[in-house]
Image (cartoon, rainbow, N blue to C red; front, side, top):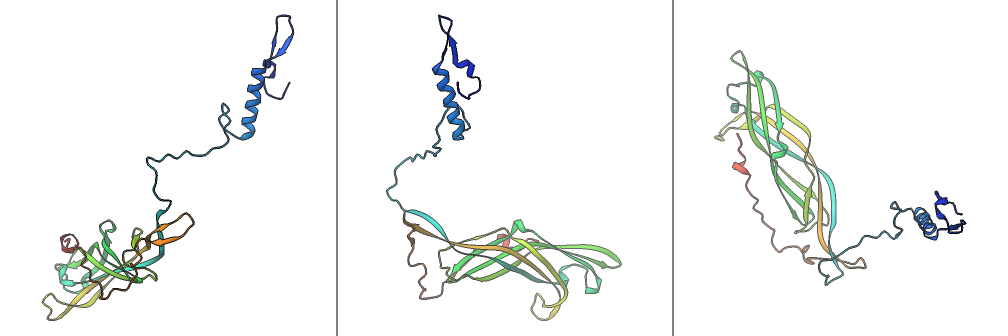
Length: 250
């Protein structure tokens, strides 16, 4: 009578009191078995060709596609550095008065511009930071914070990179913060050397350079701009956007 569960329900008593097979229920049971063997979760159907149906709103006039080809990707370091005159911290006249220096960078406020020239990525930017000096002034411990923007610039070698390529950078990560009081610096008037505090922040990021290309069905690739890597007759000159408030935040 078959191996399906509930198989007695496949037999009905006829008018003469004899049992006869209910073919409809038998076929339903066999249908269920075939679905189970197929591995389909829904036992009410048995369509084993699970292929997504794709519908296009309009037909394409080409069998080529536009993709981004990766020219290169590498992890790099960027160094932001500035030397602040000691006189900027009101009341501190000697580095011997300094108890501690704390540098707090604001990663969310970083502004930077990345530009590609032949075989190189040029990156210029500013990172806002608060430099807090705790010092002994007139016998009293005081806390003197100064907020400013620290500039950084890096030139990263990228063989094969060309103008018009696209630069993508991962979020910046601080690898180290350094400060050194007692560094000589030219005063505001530019007439003499005064004592300063050197502040340095080492940042890490991953630079990825991509290029839009056209790919045909056979894997053949051609550049969207086949002249992007031609050497210019004169060096390019770039004027980058100014940072907010001229970079002076405090």
